[in-house]
Amino acid sequence: MKFTVHIPVGEIASGEFQSIAAIRQMAAALETAGIDACYVTDHPAPSADWLHANGHDALDPFTALAFVAAASTTLMLHTNIVVMPYRNPFITAKAAATLQVLSAGRLILGVGAGYQKGEFEALGVDFHKRGALFDEALEVARMAWAGGPVVFQGRNFNAANNEPRPALGSPPPVWIGGGSSKAVERAARWGDGWCPFFAAPTMTAANQESGIHSVEQLGERIAGLLDVRAARGKRGPFDIVIGPRMSLTFGQRESAERYFEALAELAEVGVNWAMVDPPYACRQAYLENVQWFGEEVVAKLRS
Image 1 (cartoon, one colour):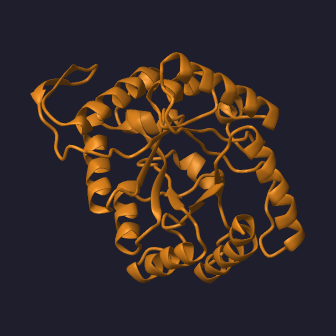
Image 2 (cartoon, rainbow, N blue to C red):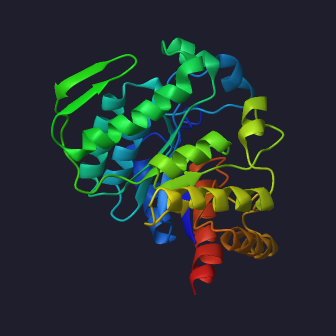
Image 3 (cartoon, rainbow, N blue to C red):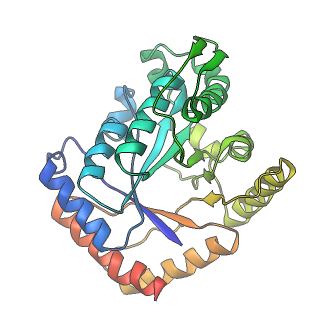
């Protein structure tokens, strides 16, 4: 089991996480703890109602992770998730390729279709066409990274012998977010991994509908996804990424023991990456929780 852990550089209100010194501290703590990757999210223009209810801040994911890359050596850099329909696919592909090159191949490009209608409207993108735009962007990004001229007539653009650079000999793995049947289909067709989530009562109705509701359901979706991949002749490595449904109480050994059991249950159905969001009332609390997780979970699991 590998771990991708939230690095809270987007917590703008606190003022404790947006500095080079803070990023260096957090990146060092994550690497010392044996964490495999850190993740940030993507919200260019969220709804104010959502933001002030149960939403969260977000810095630009590619810029934020570039700073993390410069402050670390082994930590993978995970976008969780970039909403592909928000941007022209060549812009997203260029940002991802730049980070992949400058980080020496440490990017994991987690992507999704998005769900905030108000954010789509603010960005001038048709919310109702997000699925088609997402599929288009996944195809075009692969073409952009492959090298050479690209010819592609898109819904909102026309690439007529355009040549994006840099070409990538080793493109970033693409993890498709979402738990719906359509997300499973996309992951099987375009992805190197699938990153669903367990539904929770605090989520929006749309997210509760597309979320996973049990480990049994998760296992069924994974089995179906792998069958589709096999039918398409895709038999290479494929990641399944989701955190346990239980809430880990940091600092409690008993909770860590239950967490091991939850991880084992996920591993049985094919999960090989777990997402983790340590509490972070302040930067020191975040550092302490990362250290505890490294000592009480990562080290013990791998020993």
